[in-house]
Length: 132
Image (cartoon, rainbow, N blue to C red; front, side, top):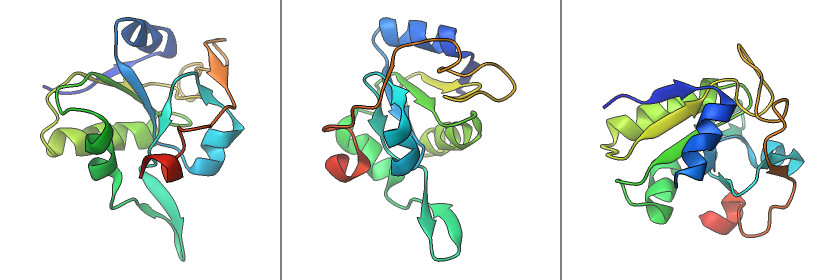
């Protein structure tokens, strides 16, 4: 089953129905603000030559969620989170996956923040370092 591309308000409805939010931005971006309840599991990390794929991404997601879990996946604008959804599908994810089109800050549609959806800067227990 392919992932869905939904605007922030529709993605938020999936969370209301029980899906979890995985924020795939860098830890620094996550700390600046993120959807309330989100866990930070970066798809890419800064390396010596720029952004590089996080080799632990799928393992850390599976550490915290069963492969049948429904996930809403978001980033800054929706591009990295689309890559994350594709990777999870390739790894055999069975639950419903939603990519947040527009991400947290907006892209081709208004972002989570611009839509006024629940957000926070509280990172306690939700950062990549906490989750690894």
